[in-house]
Image 1 (cartoon, rainbow, N blue to C red):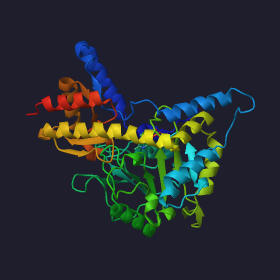
Image 2 (image 1 turned 90 degrees about the horizontal axis):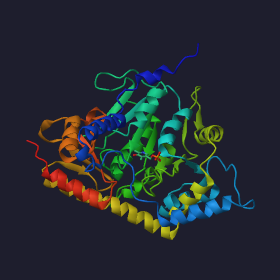
Image 3 (image 1 turned 90 degrees about the vertical axis):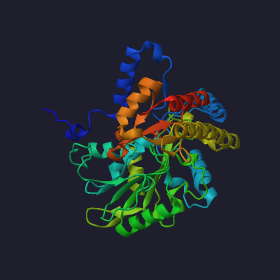
Image 4 (image 1 turned 45 degrees about the horizontal axis):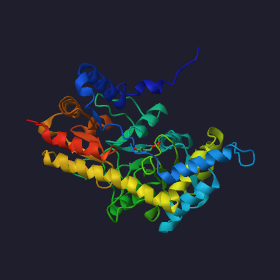
Length: 413
Ligand SMILES: *Cc1c(COP(=O)(O)O)cnc(C)c1O
């Protein structure tokens, strides 16, 4: 008899996006006329095509694969040198941040990296995860057996939840107790909040004092517009001794379907082995990567490299400006509708308080049925998300404007 990983049965069955899909399907089947009016602002996926600089690089790389002289088979598992160097230079050293080429690990996505990093970390680590949050951090820890069961509110035993509320501007402060692994996401999905330098300094200080590791998800770094908001955790002195940074080309370069991301593991980052001896993480992550992964395709890495060309940078900037322009339209529309709105300034998400004390799912159903717009209920991201919903700015401008109009037309009383 073979056995299953029982931890999977601790996962909450009604995972957010399948439940949204179920309700949308029920709505469109019951209202064929309204189906064509439906606008999706739910799942955080980009809508605009890849930048022309990327397309040109992809074409050229495909041509290279067509001839024996330039064909490539397996590449380095941790990424081609040309891309690691472009990342380290353009995203870090150009800003005075000390990151070496070989501290960059190229992957097929930050989602995978956020989950895979657990391979090299101990099972005894005490976890702290913000609430609400990108569901991947919690669920990968549940699968790995790092939690107890979920209670009736969906909170797992063994996780210190860090409430992100309107009172703390949706950026949690370090806990009073000791934890070992802390997931931070800034700018944040789903709230759109971005941590200030002082807030990140407090986290780095906490991590260093407690020998904890910060797992810093900067997938929305390119959306930061406010001056003074750190783009990288390594802008904070001491972070090289306590932080791993995850970044992705998904939301910056429109790579959600193309797949390319990277993780920064500084060589100066250490944790304790079972004997209590301090050892660096970098060799373990390298070993894990070379053992379990065979690299991102050469073609895609050439496409990602093109994001760092002069044309590529300008095209990324205009893509991001497009989505942030949508966010402004949506923020304005929701405000004019009398709703309380957060986010949308340093992130492509707006985080809206549900009116009149209704729940997140009640708001979802109202907006679906009456405005024919799909949003994401905040409670799906954690219990502190109850009473909010997320509107994604990943859309055409015309759709964002139409959603803003429809939100204004809703009456909530
Ligand atoms: C979209 C997103 C990512 C990127 O995931 P990929 O696997 O690289 O597409 C990472 N973290 C958060 C919070 C995200 O929303």
